[in-house]
Picture 1 (cartoon, helix red, strand yellow):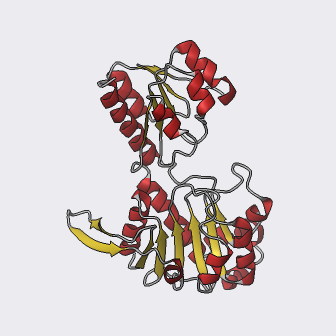
Picture 2 (picture 1 turned 120 degrees about the horizontal axis):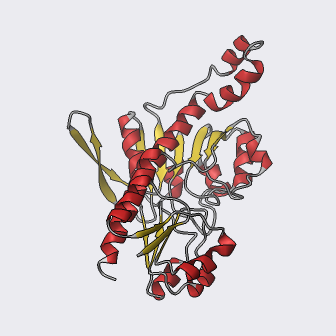
Picture 3 (picture 1 turned 180 degrees about the horizontal axis):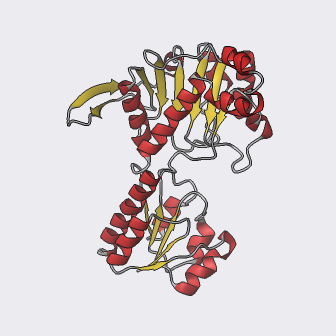
Amino acid sequence: MKILANDGISKAGELMLKDAGMEFLDIRVAQEQLSKFIQDHQVDVLLVRSATKVRKDLIDACPSLKIIGRGGVGMDNIDVEYAREKGISVINTPLASSRSVAEMVFAHFFSLARFLHEANRMMPLEGETQFNALKKSYANAIELKGKTLGVIGFGGIGKEVATMELALGMKVKLLTRTPRTETVSLHFFDGQKVDFNLTSTNDSATFLSDVDFLSINTPKTDGYLIDTPQFEMMKDGVFIVNTARGGVINEVALIDFIEEGKVAGAALDVFENEPQPELALLMNPHLSLSPHLGGNTLDAQEKIGTELATQIIELSRKI
């Protein structure tokens, strides 16, 4: 089989595919030239991340495609059902990057709770002349232990976030479309394990009423999950992190509620207008920002590559 990893794949994944006798095309093709390239080279497998779009027109133009793979969780850049109707297998790696995204969630929460996002901006500018004033301005920091963290969405990433908050001694609240109880496990370096049974709710008002921290970990949604009514349900001083998708939170309303003091601070790894976030977001001192880095660790990339390779090798035996 001939494979084009248009948004890249880890070396480990590439070697697995080559060892299985696959032909690996080591090239990046621009979106507007992609369908012609696939046709000209009779590509069987197209692997993408978030950059490359696989829409109906490309699927129709490329009858050689047998497998479309998405390195990551969400597949909103692929017309999945249409591809499957055409007999194409569509795969992804829903668990490979979960830990990396969860750690990004807490990187932002720690940054917000200790004002590191702002201190890192201000120290180069005023650290030499206003050291004591800056120290005083960041004196109202808080610990995470004992606080309540609400998690919206309880898939692979949501479970990792919940596990990490348990390890930090935080109180867990979960919001899902349908209430359910699931077990998460804390694994320790010496082989010990502790299980926790966690039950979610679908009552937004009850869920949002007392959370100190809020993490959004859902797939792409048709509308805002967090808009003015949801902000009004929250207690004053809440911290929010969105590592899910741009468009799940109303960014204009977010800034309004930050200015009112309802939201103490927020972190955005994803944006409605990506890759050109609004200037009002980029300049707001109460926001901790990152350019869609949730799953971008060497560890996650290796797991994504090997998980994709494993699925492709298994599917190739059936095609």
